[in-house]
Image (tube, rainbow, N blue to C red; front, side, top):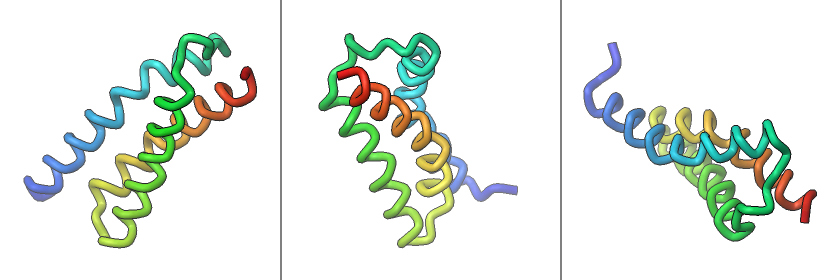
Length: 85
């Protein structure tokens, strides 16, 4: 059983990181990123990498795992945005 504080951490991290997922999935499906802000996409991607790194360093499962789940979508969206110009 997941401890209540860890469950809260997983839920909070996935909710905030998950807010990025619908846009990332749409961009990956349509290959269209012209309406996305490069700054926003870059900050979101950097945030997932930094939070996952921080979670690893402090041995926090909720922070690490939830950001590792979102990170591939964030990085793929950034790659698409940079590729499309």
